[in-house]
Image 1 (cartoon, rainbow, N blue to C red):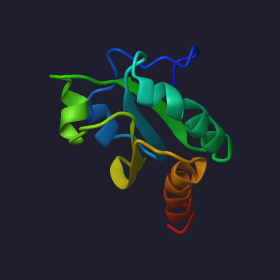
Image 2: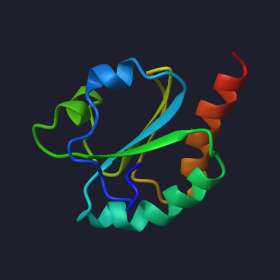
Image 3: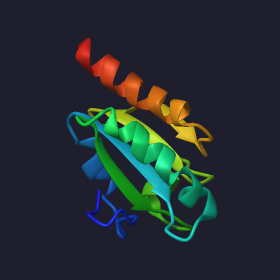
Length: 113
């Protein structure tokens, strides 16, 4: 995640994501998006409980290949990955628990391997 909390533009490529090892959450959105701004404290609080999961904020919009490859339609969309494979997804979270469950899925499943 960028140090100032802004969405990376450009973000990683799909090839980079597919070859990533370990636990990653991709957060698709835009800095100006009201839904993203509302969800930010929920996502940040849930992320604190999973320090081993890499959090990458990716700027999304029309024609952005990474978001399209994950079929992102609404912001924010969080895609939880383990070794480059999607294991959970949360779209427009309204509670911290929704986000925390995504972090738990990626964490619990990776520990059981």
